[in-house]
Image 1: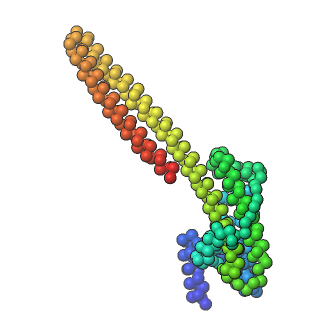
Image 2 (image 1 turned 120 degrees about the vertical axis):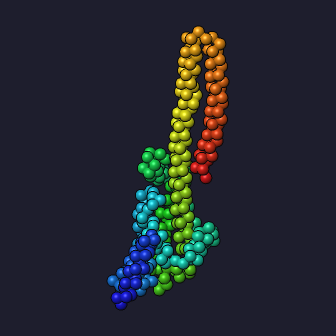
Image 3 (image 1 turned 180 degrees about the vertical axis):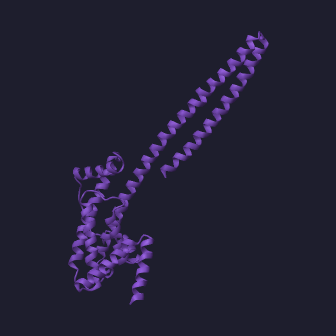
Length: 286
């Protein structure tokens, strides 16, 4: 018994180290519920799974779901612990099948769109994406609200069923389709947020490049030539003071020739820098 507990402790510690702490938590919560309430593990599994659904629902009802939501991560852990890969793959496929997925028709209000806008502004220092992204995000949140509510009711009505969750979804594929659609909606939200974040980063990098280029351009085309011109005139003036007219024109000719060569090199350098900057900024659009 002692060795069994030690082995379990080591296994769970290893899972937590690799980021599977929420999975360990779900598994232990199910075991504790089954023991404390004298129920089967199958019933306990559905009960705790339903609790997690309710938890995510409370967050989505606020009008937004953070991309780093801990409640959603817990829900993912519950899926990972109760469904096999083949079951989750089937749920994803059924979500796209109109013969299995129970269609939901709804519209979102201006207030719901406003909640999405506020979410973006809070997360991105006052910035928000265009209206189309706001509307689509609000629709995905409302879709999740309705799916979570329907799934919660379906599982509640099958709570006394002796099947575990995967067997229940196998006999009721429409429930699995709801889970698949939930993940689809969450992925849409994450995609919008990720793309908007990249867009802001691109604009920030572009502004920084403009600033850097302007400063470099001033040095190349104004500050450096003025210093060089000062040197030219200064050297030529010293020759002229010596009453050496031929030396004066010779100094001017050599210095201007050097200035022309330097300006041409600077132009080539600036052109190459522009191409490099364009290639760099293009990476943000991918």
